[in-house]
Length: 295
Ligand SMILES: [Cu+2]
Image (cartoon, rainbow, N blue to C red; front, side, top):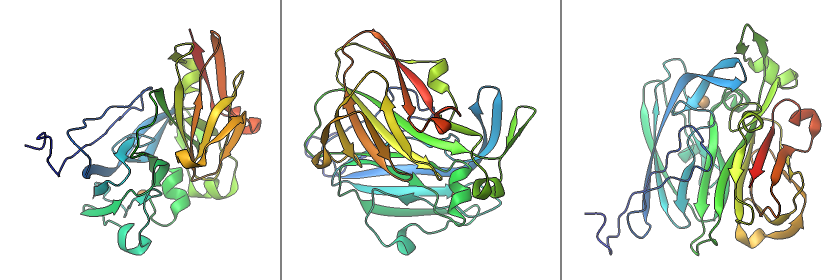
């Protein structure tokens, strides 16, 4: 019924649970209007570094949570079920322009609440649990990226989503014991792209030489940004917050602030292994370092 060409209502739900790259999976049934998204707050054991696991607080069981994708002008209807019996959770969308008290409200343990907002601006934005203390809820893993596609489609490109974040606490016998106190007072023990330190150093992202690449980068923190750089390349465009109207050209390194996002466009002219890093190397050394392998 909703595939009728002139149907006003359509529903598109994008879930990329494991943040595979490239990970754009979507079912676009007709012209845009309303997008339904289901999120579940729950505890889940996740791998945060080679040989290291952590019992994280998550959206939908992964860190980061699912990549969500809507279109400029869409009404986004989010249902959050809190499957955590211990505490309240919530979801704060940086893609929204709404009263935070009305929309980013706490959902009690076991409860389900629906919220909605209109995604008025194109780009790539963070979403995260906004329940106090926010530092702890983000530091435990409750964040992700939402892409708002511009009404006028972007040029074709191979797309990759990279969410940078960091983890705090002490590692004992292959387990990261994360703590609020460590988040407040200590440097991180790991930094990561897409939830695992050195994920793409150990399994590089394969790309084709000459194909336009578009990277959606979000710096989730909770407290560090990303001085994003690809060794051996210069970005054709950097779009702060991912808005095409913000495009800058010929940028080698660009700081995505904690809580911010940006689109980076580039293409690889020569075959090779191109590291991508936060160029704040104290933090890159803890895991926010990967490889693009162009062939
Ligand atoms: Cu939370």
